[in-house]
Length: 134
Image (cartoon, rainbow, N blue to C red; front, side, top):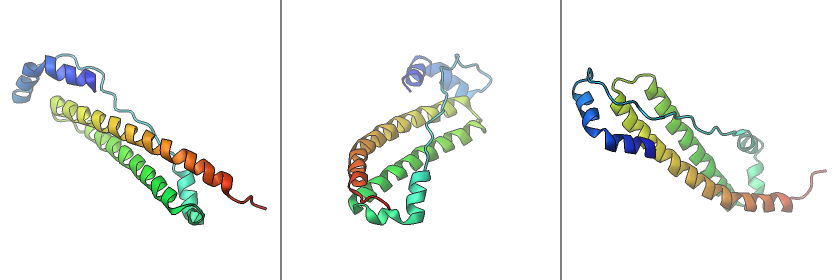
């Protein structure tokens, strides 16, 4: 994200000229690969299917649900920028979108890490306190 912001700052005039006339070249574009993390939902889906969440503290389940929803938002955001990349009509507008995506992704990652840090010790305790299956 910082590289793209610096790019826009350094080449604002050239990029504006390209927006007005797409035949005008733009300076070489910095790396803007939008690959993102992927998430595995099998544990959550199994917990839902077996209704095992009923045996966990409701506040912990709510926190877990919030984390899973944040993961989905992150993936939805990545899916959206990936779709846009297939139909670029103006590289400058696309790069502005990528810059926004990177900002969102950084925020999602920060929020997810905080949620994981909150949930994992509580989940470990809940699993440790659970009666053993026979």
